[in-house]
Length: 139
Image (cartoon, rainbow, N blue to C red; front, side, top):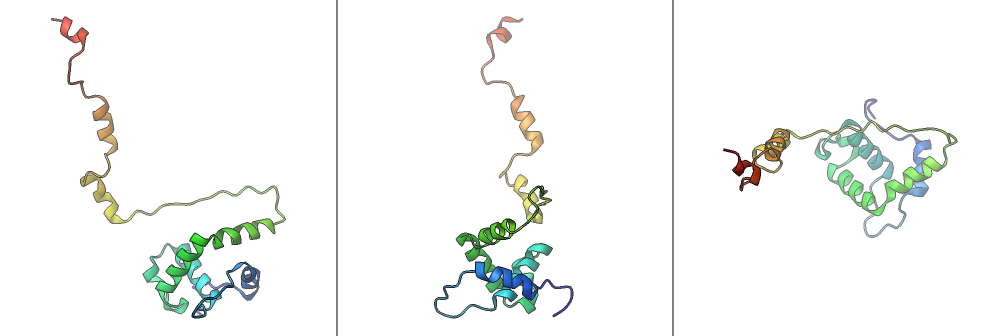
């Protein structure tokens, strides 16, 4: 296993394993430790699913497991259980989430999907179609 890839340790996975779904229907699941490590690697580095390193298995497996477990609330249960085990009761967490926009997002303004910020001010300052009574009274 290369050093620059993320891998859950045996101890970390042992803490997560009881929180994972255990009802296997049909074909047995691919190694959960490998798949969860791959999901974390993709999210941590902001990769597209198809750019996931091959050592984590097929990118489609990573994506499908992430979507299925997210909808089922598996990750929420994991986060809640791990947070409940914490001894730091007076800790405040600060989220430093950032968003990355795809380069095609800039074309949405050109296509008229969203108004530009400068267009909002122009719309607000446009005159009414019918002049007001005070405007008609002045010569």
